[in-house]
Length: 124
Image 1 (cartoon, rainbow, N blue to C red):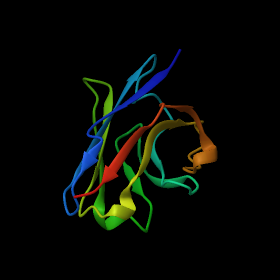
Image 2: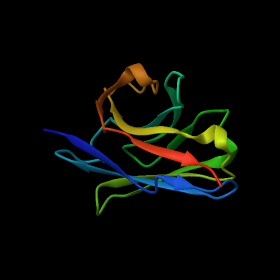
Image 3: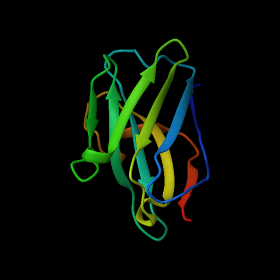
């Protein structure tokens, strides 16, 4: 059974950089042809696609966040990491990591395995 678990700080200050890690068990992040993504949900709003990293290591980002976002991976630990810089209170959200179904649709509806999510609050 595949499981994904997010980890990282729950509170960060404006202008700082957020770093979240997703640890995957029950499957490898290098398995063809899956993508491993980050999705967030601000309070009272819908799901927002942040970005993803593919089975071969290529990364893809939401155009609205691309300038501030980076996704990397550690295949030895079966983990992938999200970094978001220049944080503002508008980045406050529950952040989810997830795996896509294998069709590279890279949208929230295209994900089949999800972590439970972690709340990140940006506040001074």
